[in-house]
Amino acid sequence: MRQRNGMGAGLGLALLSSASFGTSGSFARSLTDAGWSSGAAVAARVGVAALILAIPAAIAMRGRWGALWRSLGTVSGYGLIAVAGCQVAFFNAVQTLSVGVALLLEYLGLILVVGWMWLRHGQRPRRLTVAGSVVAVAGLAFMLDLAGETRLDLTGVLWGLGAAFGLATYFVLSSKVDSELPPVTFASAGMSIGAIALLAAGALGALPMHATTATVDFAGQRVHWLVPIIGLSLVAAAVAYVAGIGAARRLGARLASFVGLTEVAFAVLFAWLMLGQLPTWMQFAGGALIVAGVVLVRMDERAEGEPAPAAKPAATDQPALSTVS
Image 1 (cartoon, rainbow, N blue to C red):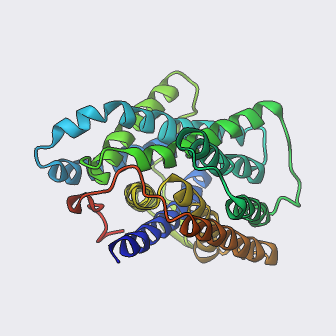
Image 2 (image 1 turned 135 degrees about the vertical axis):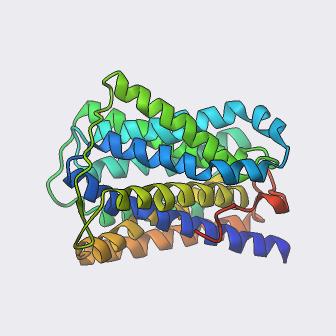
């Protein structure tokens, strides 16, 4: 019963994380339309989120600072690869690729997760997982409506695959972290390192950094520029990353990565509600296929006896922002 409850909580956290990540496009769009560069919006999102989580992260540690020191390498890899690297790779990819193709390449990271679990942990993908992968990727292609005009460029493709590596790293490291290190602390420390890396990339000219303090259009209203910044930082970063880490600990990297695909469906939904961008029938069909792919992977894991995540979280490791998220 406890394992079943843990699985249910993990799925709930994974969906919460996906929904929170799914708001990022709508919040960021209002900033970029007002003249913000993507790099500046992402750096503000990650940096402010790290500050928001700093106090809850310190409280959650309760003197267990040794756990953070032991996990410093994992936290650094998370911040540099899963947070900063993934963002930089994606935004470089969209310089020469359509957004749909770049997103499709990024979400191939779930295939990398399946391969890692096979090579590193001997969890060879069975028929249902393979079928779920194919169905979910097909659903993603439908959601992104790739039938329209697309552009391909070798450099952009390589950047897109780099984003896929960053996404896979996010799920793998989230599921592997020391159980004594609370998710809120792991997220705050990782995003702090990621924010520093993003600002450094901007200082070196590798990532455009320009912003404005003018009012912005959001959900059909003229609002202060801090409104989307708070939304990006609190919802699309702080809540999203903490919930995602908690989900990966409970579900394991493989299942968490497949549930993470629902982020695209949530992004389409929020674009409809906030920006008035009505989804097409193809996107609705894609959402159904993604859900079907997740169900197939979940069925396969149940047939395998539900392999446990590497580290079982203690009672004190519940995401500190769960009441907010």
